[in-house]
Amino acid sequence: MRHCILIIALTLFLKCNLIQTFNPSTLITGINPEDALLNFTGLARKYGHPAEIYHVETQDGYILELYHLPGTGRKPILLMHGFLDSSDTWILRGKDSLGISLADNGYDVWLGNTRGNRYSSSHISLDPQKNPEYWMYSIHELGYYDLPAIIDEVLLRTGAQSLTAIGHSQGNTIFYILGSTRPEYNAKINLLIALSPICFMHNTSPPVSTYLKLAPKLAKIARRMGIYDLLRYDGPENKFIRKICSQPIIGYAVCARLFIFPLIGFDPTELEYEFYEVLIHHLPAGTSWMNYEHFGQIGMSKRFARYDYGIKGNVIKYNSTIPPLYELSNVTMPIALLGGRNDPLSTLEDVDLLKDHLPNYVEYLVNPRLQFNHGDSVWGKNMKDYLFRYIYSTLEWYDIYP
Ligand SMILES: *[C@@H]1O[C@H](CO)[C@@H](O)[C@H](O)[C@H]1NC(C)=O
Ligand SMILES: *[C@@H]1O[C@H](CO)[C@@H](O)[C@H](O)[C@H]1NC(C)=O
Ligand SMILES: *[C@@H]1O[C@H](CO)[C@@H](O)[C@H](O)[C@H]1NC(C)=O
Image 1 (cartoon, rainbow, N blue to C red):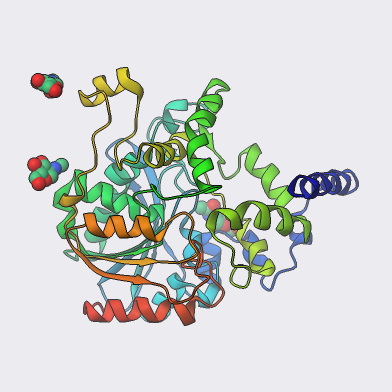
Image 2: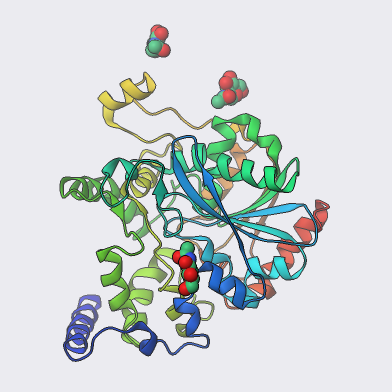
């Protein structure tokens, strides 16, 4: 059945493309079609908060783009996006998205972008198009280099002693890596709200577990072919995917129903066709193959550990045949966890396990909405009803006002 749909879709796609040249703006029929093609600064301006742009250099030479939606106060809130995503994710729903809502309420909002995505794709000496070394990073580097550089920039610019963070998916994983490998950063975070928490991926089932199991094999094939970047925003693979996925109706049937929902949980009322059309022009935003492979290693080895370079590589890198674990007992920042019952990537079993390993989790909420999936905490149509209330009450409980 799935294969039939796929073949029909591909045939129609190829046929369409023989008679029309691709022009995304003519295909988008959503409520806010222009949002598909606007970038972060365009969207932020449209929704009433012109963004300031900062460039942050990491210790290992990556240049990251950091956005600021200035608020009325000086208590910064930092939003960190997930895997293959970018800062756009926090403002794509306009007034109904968390980034804009926080800014509308006067909060001082900062939005980071990790290395390799569409906004953070430069380096002091490496060229991502020419130097494979640029893409030699896993989740480790995102937490160990990118996140502290972003945090220090925000604290420097605001003069604040600490900041509040909200991280979605991998956007909270990187805080566990930072807190365990550079414990001095725990004091710089007065609260982390972890949406769709990802740390252990030990209790996943197919198709998620299949994607995890395949990761090292696929990464090896990609390396042999000389491909190190994974779905770079303006890369050829991404352009191809975007072409297929933006075909009217068929695109949603193929990309959302066959690929996105099985991975993030089925919830078409919250990720409806009109918004999907906007979303697929912003996601995937690019990362490295090693980033994906590292998740596969964590899931398969059932160890939240550093990247596995193989026995020889590990001995050189870590003086150990297996990669060392991240010491979660060192993650002493206060953390509020929000899980969902319909989230195959962050299963509640895995969120429970994370909670048991964190010395300072302060709140653990399972979203009352039964269909709450992995994406509903950033893309859901009615987040303002089932998510924002929880976020604002947590902020107020911690005395975090603009
Ligand atoms: C965003 O879009 C604007 C207007 O099209 C453009 O001037 C700007 O360079 C873009 N920014 C990035 C980071 O691509
Ligand atoms: C983590 O904490 C342990 C003690 O609990 C300490 O020995 C270790 O050095 C810490 N790790 C780091 C990276 O500081
Ligand atoms: C490597 O580990 C062994 C024991 O596992 C230890 O004796 C040795 O000192 C370590 N070497 C370095 C360079 O840390």
